[in-house]
Image 1 (cartoon, rainbow, N blue to C red):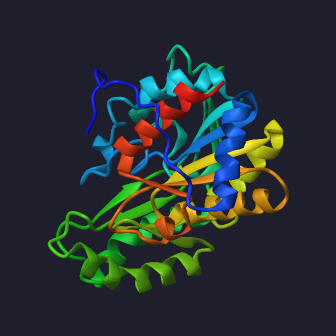
Image 2 (tube, one colour; image 1 turned 180 degrees about the vertical axis):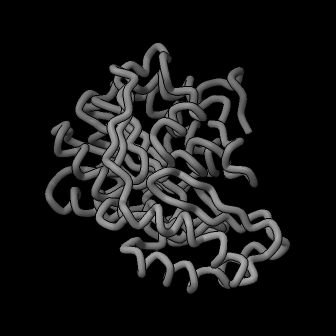
Length: 285
């Protein structure tokens, strides 16, 4: 893991695809017309056993503040509540990040640094029912010791990373949680040792496309690490097919290979993401 005394890198990785190379070239040629969009957990912040202790890589904020003034916008797109991501990320009142946007709950919530306020819809009615039924379902399913539930307000996430057999606990709960979600008009979003029950109709791809179109940017970089980032990858592919250059970055993980197989650039976790942002900031015009 790097620290703030490391020299800024100036060498950028070469994307593995023609669309990726075009995306990076467009970003560097006209950074003021580019959007930098990033997942939080696993991308800016290392994955930790207790999600409440997740914090960005120590060089993440300096890298973002160096890059943000050179690009059209920086957005953090996360499954967390927007306010939680802002708190854990330390994004509020940071010089250089005055126009940062955090799109929380997969885009259902939005925090703007310029106002410091979160806008959000009312919770889906199925959330309250699932919240009430979930403890009994976990007991009836014999949920492994160490399994625990995170209440996100607009969603509920069941974590298995602390169990003795995290993957086994994950696999055992997937079907009953999917049934519970379906009965209440929700969906299950699988992730890195977590199953999240949330409303349908909003994902990181929808959030990214909506934000790109609102801004009217001419290129986009998206970096993520987990299955919930695949819709954002698909959104970048859609933008590229429509003529908007884009670069797909994977914050590498041995737990999830689906992103690395689709990415133009694979970096070594949050530390690698930071180095990439630093290099782009150094080379952006």
